[in-house]
Image (cartoon, rainbow, N blue to C red):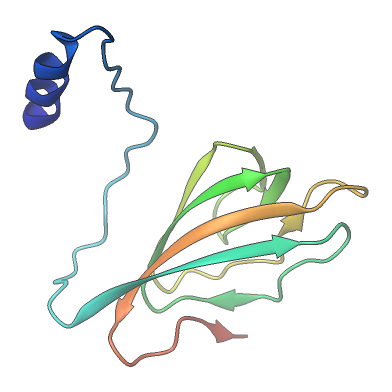
Length: 125
């Protein structure tokens, strides 16, 4: 964070000033990332369609790009996330059916899946 402040301070001396705003912060699982990779996927959920129940061996950081996304992970309350909202999915937690919260509009998600190289991204249940 200190380096971001230095960068912002340097560029603020110009005609326009930079703004840095923390949008999301969450503890990560205790994993070594040696032998891991990240895969970014864009998912579009048409109205009325939900994802099947599944787990991810790794962890997910995602953001809602468009629409409203009904998000539900076992052990947590179901939530409706809007464009710009960010979410986290812990490894191995059951992801309950989720999808567009609208009966008329799709929801588009960008998900960063951190996982061991060569392993599957998700396991259906």
